[in-house]
Length: 430
Image 1 (cartoon, rainbow, N blue to C red):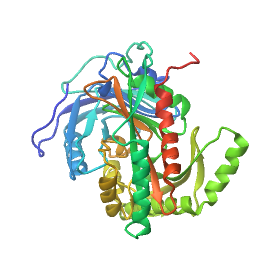
Image 2: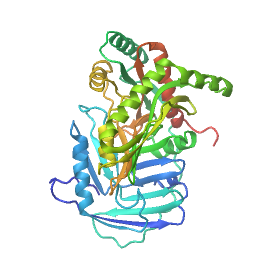
Image 3: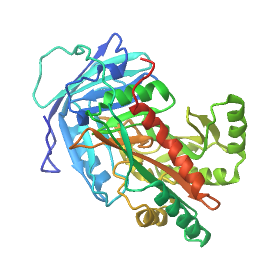
Image 4: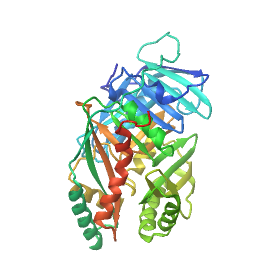
């Protein structure tokens, strides 16, 4: 059951019960087959995290105030919740999942959902949470395993709103604007539409992505499914962390060649400059909420199966009670997905990109009743069509700076589409 409260001031009453489990096993295998595709949620990395399904409460909001409205709604839910939590770690008890559009003027709303059921694992501890609008007395066990998901069939790919040639033209124009001194960096994205003859099961995508990309956070909220390597922010009992990625090079598949490429990436002035912009934007946004901060002097190279990124892990100690969502809102959009200066870059995206990003490159993640949580940037992702689940729109973007080459950026965006394209494909090893 879903509900959208009418009054901001009135607490929202829900009953929440969390019980410990011996071992949850594979979290993704608990996701049921008989739930609508847009009611499955996930935030899983290396077997730990949260999955959920069903809708006890839902909020949809849009526009420039979407984060503030979501925060206000969550405060009312937290105040009105009757919580019995036998586990007491971040992610247990009352939990919501959220996904927010990149742009203030997107046609797609932000969505915050409190699942009816959540199964979690953290550092060897497992639990199940049930949330209802009425007191419930049923036992807190796990449901019977669902049949495994089927692969999409008869897949066909077509250009989305931005074709490769459109993208090359946009990159060339962006480079000209950078040369003219209008901005330092802008992130431009393009899309690709995949169509299946059968409904696309998010469970298939989540399992394939988790299998292939263990260094990422595998997520699903309201039909947006992906595997992001970029942690926008995590708040965990007073510790704030953020993983910044900017600067990318494609892998060849040859270990020796890739090692040489990783070295060239770590020395590339173009990529180091792009990375520095992104790190600075995150550190500046977190500073007002932090009593101390550690920003490493130089990045490390994060190796993913398809690409390598320059990466920096920023850590800070919380100085106020800002929730993980409030921190995510202060960080969005970072230079990694918008550009520098941010306001001018976002305006240029609106002018050159010629598509609505929807929730691509926006914050996606979860938050508990204490404000702890984790929010990634919705990259390496696709949005399953709400009305026609046989169709999914895939997205990829690249940071454009002085010296960017349009054809090289088209190739990089193509490489970034590979994780989702491969995840959709039938498993030939089965």
